Structures are given as structure tokens and as C-alpha cells.
Length: 151
Image (cartoon, rainbow, N blue to C red; front, side, top):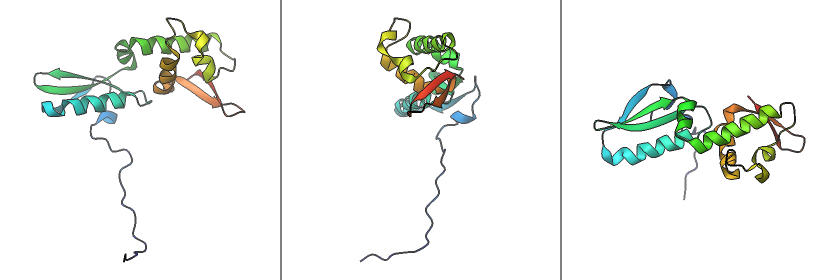
């Protein structure tokens, strides 16, 4: 048999707790994440996951002496290491600027007939729309879709 308790508050956990100080970093800042080779894969995985959050905060990892160090980098520096994402993003931004004032939907930016070597694949453009959402101003259509503009 279980005893039922009343009015016991739920434990409060920090909503935004991060193991590493990513959000406190400015572009160019870095820190030693670990000196333990057993932890290197975990740190790299955390950096990769963090780079997929759509908030304009990009990180790069590398080794210095016997340390795994993490740097905060600019969007431009991040895109240098991700040329396909850069091509897809530049294609979509150019498309939006050339069609300024028109109702451009997600499907306009990702439809297959736009596939050119410079535009990236449809799936790459879908991922770029999410990862680099801060470049876009998104508003709702009457039927539940979204219109896109350059932010």
C-alpha cells in the first residue's frame, strides 16, 4: 500500500543548465573542455549538437598540447567549414532578396525544381532553414503554412 502525500512541490531544475559555458562566450573566446582523452568524444558530440541549435552560437573544437579546447566562432567562420550549408543558405537568401515583396513559402525555398549545384539538395535546404532560422523572418499563412523573408 502507498501513502499519498499532499502539497509536496516538484523539484525545480534549471531550465537552461549547460555543462559548458557556451552561452557566456563571445566570438573568439575559448576554454579547455578536458584533458582526459576518454572524454574527448563526449565533448565533440556536445559541440556538434550545440552547433545545430538555431541561435547564432557556433563552436569549434581542437587540440592544444594535451587539451581539448572549444572556441566560439562567428557564423561566417562556421560556414567556411560547412560549404554545402553555406551554398544552400546563400542560395535561399539570394532567392528571397530577388523575390522581395512576394509571398515566399517553405516549399518555394525547398522544392525540387530549384535543385542546382549552387542551391544544395532539398534535404540540405530543409536543415539550413532550421539551423539558420535567425536569418529568416517567418510569418504565418492563412492555411497554417509559413511565409519567409530575410530577417
